Length: 210
Ligand SMILES: Cc1cc2nc3c(=O)[nH]c(=O)nc-3n(C[C@H](O)[C@H](O)[C@H](O)COP(=O)(O)O)c2cc1C
Image (cartoon, rainbow, N blue to C red; front, side, top):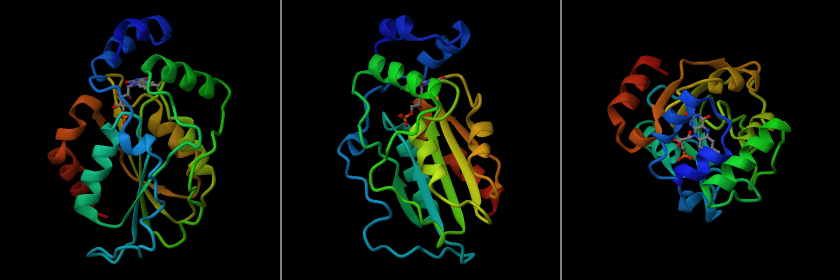
């Protein structure tokens, strides 16, 4: 990440900003995200039955790969289907440009179109939903995804990565978009540790006892 340009463009609080920078060690968009290789649920895949016969979906958005790594680590434990939320118009690979665009989208309460939009989640019992903390809340393509689905009767397990600001409004704002769901305790991991957090992930999964 380019700290100087971030400083210029960011209106985060001084403390939050310093904290955010700590977590931005790999600020390049994830290849899978930009490659638009997004499959909804893997082509033709049937929902996996785990030991409790619950059908699981892991849906995530990731720009620079941290949240993707967490999603994959969860998937390795739970099985089920994995779905990447990919905006139709990709975010720039440039950090400052992405920070600016994300801010604008939040201010406008935008709903950026997403590719391979998944709207029918009726087959799933449990949906893990993960994203990075962007400006204290969610990347707006996640709102597009959430609003396209019916959450009634689902169990939603949220997970977030952050750059030092922690959860801020990530959990609160997700709850507003998942009306009717039973929302579990969230997992929030520092982005720069996301690829190394299997034990935290396991502890969280164990606690959820889904
Ligand atoms: C547009 C943008 C806004 C961000 N805003 C925040 C923030 O408000 N608070 C914070 O702690 N981290 C913030 N970050 C840092 C990310 O949350 C963190 O690096 C995260 O782990 C990135 O996840 P990803 O690799 O899945 O995209 C921001 C990063 C970007 C690109």
